[in-house]
Length: 363
Image (cartoon, rainbow, N blue to C red; front, top):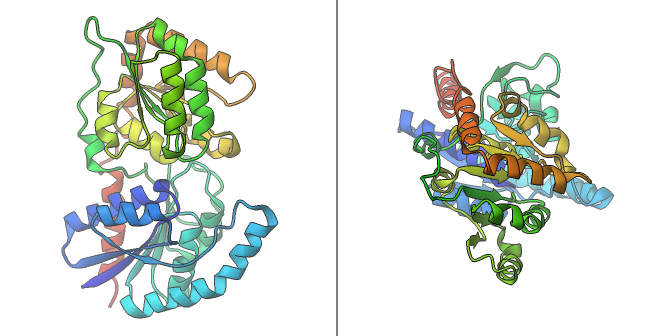
């Protein structure tokens, strides 16, 4: 049995595309064992174990965040991280390492390079992240979204869309609300900055109410109780508050309009289901989140509302326009269906073939 390491941890945006590729590999061969490598966050264990894969942990602190103290913690954690990483390599003797971005990829990809093991990187965002920029020259190939920026010179790049689970491609086609049925709106705050999106939606509840919209609001676990009480105080009994949505494909299937942060995974899943959206890029990550939605915005499949001093008024205008015109929502969905045209294979299959090709060349 050939072992492949998938370095994917930290956030769902790194883990979920890796799981999509791992499942594609499993569909193509039974002779490859995929082992995930993360950094010990609870979300990693939950998502990886639910997907049926094993997880090894390399104890590495994040580089970004926490100022100079955070960077110092990262540096101090490196010796032990490399020690644990070397033990993992000795235990599994991997034939290929696939890094899915972020600091959890650092140690496995560097160790692959040191041990002469082929590797590749996947970049989720339209603007390459710091870890992948550092690691790119150590790998055989980088997979990145079309038009991605920040990629070092002389790095071999294959353009591919974000791999998402099969369930998102199987979602039923978009349909207009039935007569007498309100527009169903799905609100996704994202893992970071959810509270500010939550507050925005709460403040603009009058717009939803005026148009008879039905809201499903994923608030995040930390903010669910507060938001439930706030909606109750407004008499908003037509709002369903949920801390977390595990079956996102089904939730998107029910939606006529999505309001979301612009993380690469969220954009890919929403786009795969051809659901119209209003994106609010996270302000502290505005550069790459804004780039993530450029294609769908250019196709007029989504509205983008910047989180600045005019965000409330801009979101109010966008909501009023879309909720009063279901045909506009349908037209947005039609535009989204063109994304991916001309690609012979789904993104997860493209990346899975890279894994199979690499291990087929190994002695």
